[in-house]
Image (cartoon, rainbow, N blue to C red; front, side, top):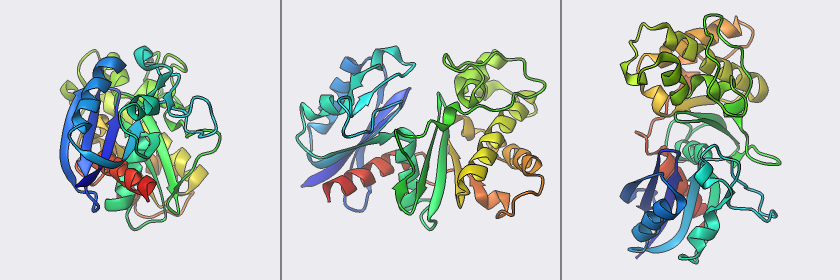
Length: 287
C-alpha cells in the first residue's frame, strides 16, 4: 500500500509521519534536530519502511521556495549554522523519487488547521508559531500569500514595552518579534525556564503585548478571518487571555471585528497541525 509522507522540520525536532488519503497519521517518529547528516539519516531510515506516493515538507527557515531558483528547496540564512545553505529537497530526492511539496513549517501548520482544524470553514487565516523561533504564514482562498519569498512575520519590528530593557535575542534584528517573544528570548530575559515563570510575573504581560502587536499589525495589513497562535510559548494557558486584553487596548475600538475570543485563537489539532498540513501538501502535490 502507498502512503503520503510528512516531514515537519523544526528547530528543535523533526517530526516525520506516514498518512492515508484522509490525512490520518498512521505512524510517526520524533527526531532531534542536530546536524544535517545525523538528523537526515534517521529521517531517511524512517521512510524506507514505506512505499510513498509523495512527501510534504514544512521546514524552519528561511527557505528558498522559488522553483526557478538554483537553490530551490534549500534552507538558506538560518541562525542554525549547521543547516545554512542545506539542500533539503536534494537530500530527500537522493533516496525517494516521488513528488515533494516544500514550504515553511508555519505554512504547513496553517494548512493543517485549514484542512482539518479551526480554520477549516474560513477563506482567510494567519498562523503564527511562537516557539524556539517565531514565524508566520497567511492563506487566502486556499492559497498562500507570498511573493518574492515566503513572509517573515516573526521578524517584524514592534514597540518595546516601557518596562522591558531586554536587549533582544535575534542575531539579525535584536528587538524584533522573535527577538523579544520567542521561547529563548523569554528565558534569557527572565534567567529561568519559561515553565518556571509564575503566571503573575510581568514577563508575561510583556510577551502578551508583543504578540498582541503582531496580531494587530496582521489585522491592519491582511484583515484575516482568523488569527491562530501556536508553538511552545502558547502552551501557557493564561497567555491567550492576556493577548486578547492587550489586543483590544491596541485596537481601541478602531476596527469592527468578531469577538476577540473567536478571532485570535490557539490551534485545535493537539500539536498535529504541522504533520497534518505536510500530509495535505503531499496529497496536493501527488494529485
